[in-house]
Length: 294
Image (cartoon, rainbow, N blue to C red; front, side, top):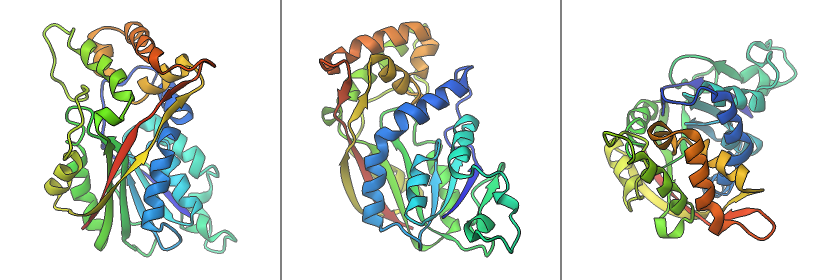
C-alpha cells in the first residue's frame, strides 16, 4: 500500500462555512461512509489489488483510498479541501516520517509513500510509473455546475495514466430511486428565496440520465460499462442526519440565501418521513457508476 495525497483545485468552494474543520469532521465521521458500498462495488469490478496504481480525484477525507490501500493498491489522492485532506493524511499517513523514510527502511511501502502538499497529480512511485485507474467518487448529477471543475481535472489527469487506463465516474441515481432527493429539494427551495434569485453553481437540481456520459464525452473518454449500487443513508438520529447532509456542501447556496439555523430546521422537518420508531433515520438511495477507458 502506498498512499500519496496531493492538494488540487477540484471542487474548490470559497463560500465554505467559517468552521470548515467541523464540517470536514462531520463528513468523515458521519457522511462519507454512506458511499462505502459504491467503493466496494467499483473495486470488485475493477479487481483492485497490488497491481493497481490509483488516482482518486476529490478524495475527501480518504475513506475510498483507505479501502483500496487495504486491498494492496498504490493510491494517490487529490482534493482542494484542506481540512478533509488533513483527515485523510491522519488516516493514511499517520507516521509523519513516512515521506522521508531511508532507502534501507524495513517498510518498503513507507519508502515509496509521498505527501505532496501543493501542485497537481504526480506519478505514484519514484520510478514515475503511471496510473492505471482513475476514480471520481464525489458523486455528480444533483448540483448545478458540479461537473465543471471535474472536466479539466480529468483532462489533466488522463495523460498521467497508461494508455487504455480505466476511469470510473460516479453520480446519483434517478431521483425516484433516491429518498434523499426529497430532502435535497429543501436546498433548492431555500436558495430560491434569495433576492435577487440566484442560479449559482452548487444549487440542487434533479439528476439527469446522461450526466456521467456527458462528462465522459467532454473529456474524450470511451464508456465501457456501467452499474448501479444501493447506498442507503442511515443515521443514528435526526441531528446526525442534518450534520451529515450539510457536510456535503449541497446546502451551501441555501445557507447563503437564508441562514444555517433555518436550513437545519427545514432539513430536520424534511427528514421526519424517514425517521423510524427507534429514532434512527433511513433513506434508501441508488448511485450509479460509469466505467470508461482512456
